[in-house]
Length: 118
Image (cartoon, rainbow, N blue to C red):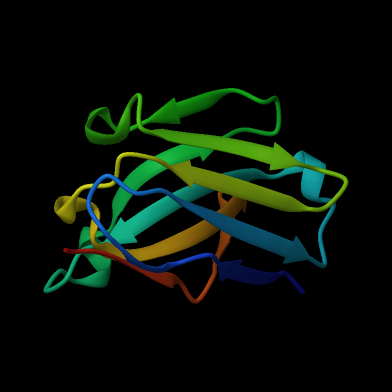
C-alpha cells in the first residue's frame, strides 16, 4: 500500500522561499513518477493545477508560471521528492499535493498549505 506524506508548507512573505518534501513508502520509489499539484483557495479538487513533475528517468517539467522560480528534485535513496520554491508570490498561495503515479495508477498525499502574504 502506497503511503505519501508531504511537509514543508507554511506562511511566508512575498519573495521568500520554502522547500516542500514528499516522502513515499510501500513502493519501489525509483520507478515511479512524481508530480506536485496545487489547489488554490476556492477551487475544487478537479481544478488542481499541475505545478511540476519529475519522471523516474529524471526528466522534469514545470508550469510556465513557476518556471525559473521552482525546482523539483528527487532522492531515491530517501524515497523523497522536493519542491524548492523561491521568490514566492501571493498567487502561489494554495494547498500543495504530491501525486505519485506509474502506468496510469496513482496516489495522492494529504497536502501541505502554502500561504504567501505580507
